[in-house]
Amino acid sequence: MELSKISGDIEKVVVTEEQIQKRLKELAAQVEKDYEGRDLLLIGVLKGAVMAMADFSRHLQRHIDMDWMAVSSYGAGTQSSGVVRILKDLDKDILNREVLIIEDILDTGLTLSWLTENLTSRGAKSVNILTVLRKPDAAKVSVNPKYVGFDIPSEFVVGYGLDFNEKYRNLPFIGVLAKHLYS
Ligand code: 5GP
Image (cartoon, rainbow, N blue to C red; front, side):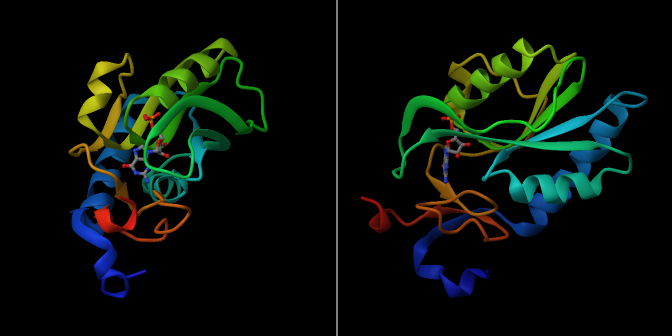
């Protein structure tokens, strides 16, 4: 959906469609180098990482496996609840696999630190993280993503997979949601 259709809902665009695609292509080239001759299993975190997985995986010039998990740490609002629940688990065993988690955003880091531990405990050979966005708060927790698309300010953003009450996921860019919509 184009910005013009919902311009009143978006305070400002933080990352444009072009910037996202350029950066994902760069990261794909980096991942190809780092994983050369190695196994690579991409695990997408539903639903937010759907766009990133679709675009990033298509930039990769090599074979990959793909799996998905759905976890929940947020309710219907904009504040982290601190509770992580598995809503959908992986389809396959990841024993000895080289896992790259594909995530939309690293905010408090609660979700990704929990997920990294969870996947490591299943016997993965390696677990790394690619996140499209990272907020400054993430620095406070022990999550160290190997690949980061963009560092952004601590504001609630939507688009490119990120929702507010399930809306705005289908924006091709990332923007700050107008405050009047949730305050
Ligand atoms: P964390 O556990 O790092 O605080 O956040 C993990 C999840 O919270 C993300 O996967 C995402 O679903 C949600 N989240 C965090 N910040 C934002 C934001 O700015 N916008 C949206 N739409 N979701 C967010």
